[in-house]
Structures are given as C-alpha cells and as structure tokens.
Image 1 (cartoon, protein in one colour):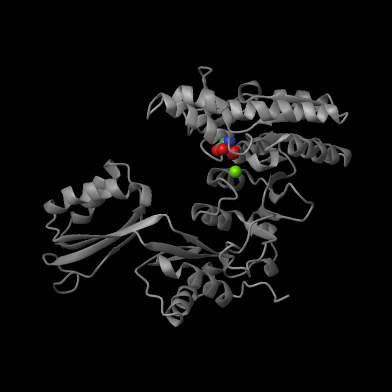
Image 2: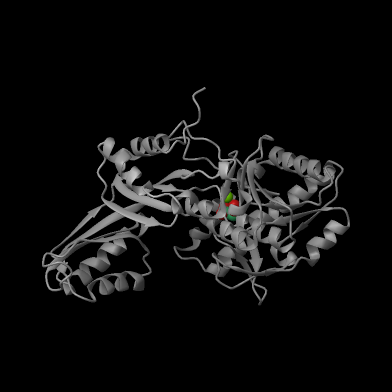
Length: 410
Ligand code: ASP
Ligand code: MG
C-alpha cells in the first residue's frame, strides 16, 4: 500500500493511512506500507538547498531530500501504534534498496527482502520510506521526483506481493483529463503498455519508471483514492484483460510542454539530419516529433533544399535554439522558425495494432473541427498530432467523443 504526499499531508491524514492499513491486515493480509513525504515537503527541502547556490551538490541534495520520507515513515508507524497495531518503520538503507550512485535520479539495482519479511513475521506492518535508497558505498540516494511510486512497485516485486495499491488524491486513471473533458471516465482496467504511453504523455498519476518495473515483473498495480473505498484502476498485462475491456482507444492525452522548431531551406543531402540531431544529442536535448519535407529536387534525389521540423521540451527550447542557430549555418539553413504555442494531442490504445484506420479517423475528427495538424508521430499503440495550443480543449473533447470514450449522459 503506497500513500502519496497528499495522503500523508498532515497528522489527520496520517491517522487515516494507519487506519486503512490496519483494516487491510484485519482482512488477513500481510501489509507493507510505502510513504511519500508530506505534500510540498520535497519542494521545500530542495528550495532550502538552493539557498546555498544554484547548483547544490547532488549527494547532499539526496541526503536532504530523503528526510521528507523519513519523517512520514516514522509518523505513520507511530499512528499505527496509537491505534493498537504493530508497525516498524524502515528507511531505504535499512531495507537495503540498493541503487546506483546517480544522485537525484538513481536506479534500483536490487532490493533485499530480509528486513521486510522479519517485520512481517512479527505480525507487524512494515512502513517503508519511499523515494530513497543507498548505493554500494553507503551514500543515500533518491529515485527522481515521484520516485516513491517506483519504490512501491519495486518492493512489491521483491516480496512477490499480491497487489501494489497506489493510494492517491484521484480515484483512478481517466480516459482523459476531466478538467478538460468533463465526459472523461475512470478506466477500470488498463494494460501496462497503455499506461506507459499515458504516463510518458504527462498523465501524472504514476511515475513512468514504476510502470516499466510493473510491466517487467508483472506486478498488478491498483491505483485508488486514499479518501474513499471506490474501485480504482487496475494496471495489468494484456492477458489479464478480457475483450470487452479492450477498447481500440483507451485514452486521449495532451502535452503542452513541447515547442516546435522549423529549419527552412537546409541542404538536402546525406548526413545533414545526422549533423543537426547529433548536435542536439551532444547538448543532451531530447527530440520528440520529427518531420522532414520532400526535397525541392526530383523525388528522393540529393542536392536540393528541404525543411526540417521537430519538437523539443519547452525547458530545452532556448538551448535548442542556440545549438541550431550555430549548426544551421553549416547545413545551409536559410531561416529558423520557432513556435511554442503548440500542444501535442495523442490517442493511445492497444487496439490500434489490430484495427486499420485509427490514425485516419483521428485526422478526420480534427479536420471536422477545422484544426490544422502541424506534425504527426506514431508508435504501435499511439498517434500524436501537434496543433495550435488554443485548440487543446476542442481537440481533446472531439477525440474523446469521436472514439466513443464519453461517459453516458447522466
Ligand atoms: N517526495 C518525492 C517527491 O515529491 C517522491 C514522491 O513523492 O513520490 O518527488
Ligand atoms: Mg506521485
């Protein structure tokens, strides 16, 4: 049972976590609880570190950030004691969540289940501080923002848990953002692959890496509300879903975090695109969508000029502009155009693998709304279109309705 920051935001909520975990033990289960820091606490701690310089030392940042979860794990154990239950808190290094030494974004290597099992054998609840681990030299590490989801799923895998329940402030995964499309529905069951796409498209309910680990080890994940007992969303393998549960399109996502760059009139010859994207890679800038137009000469022949359009994260835009302005000259670029008033809308669904025409239908829905498509990218189970940001709501709602995802009118 993993409880996020809002679920442990104050003493009353921590009491609620204690109650909820004890209820679960009373149903006959062994319970391991993973906690995040109190909502806002990690930001507060990182803010404190930044009082001592713009680039504080990463090792000390992790030593500091890990304290947020140390507090909530101990408080949760105390809350369980007060309700008459048994509980023992464990920090990352006490469990031995062994990670690499990449401070602030460490990866888990192994998890020792001995300490956890010892606590369970005593009939107690193990309350584990999420987000933190230890490297092989004993340094404290953290797993990246939102990392307690990853702690939870990895620990669930290590102890072969029946289920990894992720308790949060929403009651599940939705077909789209309910703030944008009020007709959004809670999804009862979703596959790992779909969840992975939705998480990478910005659905914040689960950290991406936690979904990767769940998929790799087959951990059944149940996303649910810590404030009520409603059924949430089960994230599971495709095999765990019946046909009725498999919609062609499971969800619609949007991401306002990308910016578009267009290089006009670059030379159309071998090696040009390699040069441009090599320079971006050297600067550690990830590129998402890419389109290169047909060259101005005869089909496929080298020698003319062409336009190359691509998107990067908004946070990387200034650096990308600098790189391209410099490299552009080498490939004969005539002009660089930048547009950060764009949004990427995507549809995600396993059914795309077996149904033709899903992308065409998406384009038609956008066309009917008079929305121009500026770039397209696809994967096996996803189609994304870049459009003007002002059409975000219109596009999301139209796609949601068009693919039959709207909840029945009340
Ligand atoms: N407390 C950490 C964070 O805010 C980890 C987590 O909450 O999952 O990112
Ligand atoms: Mg979280």
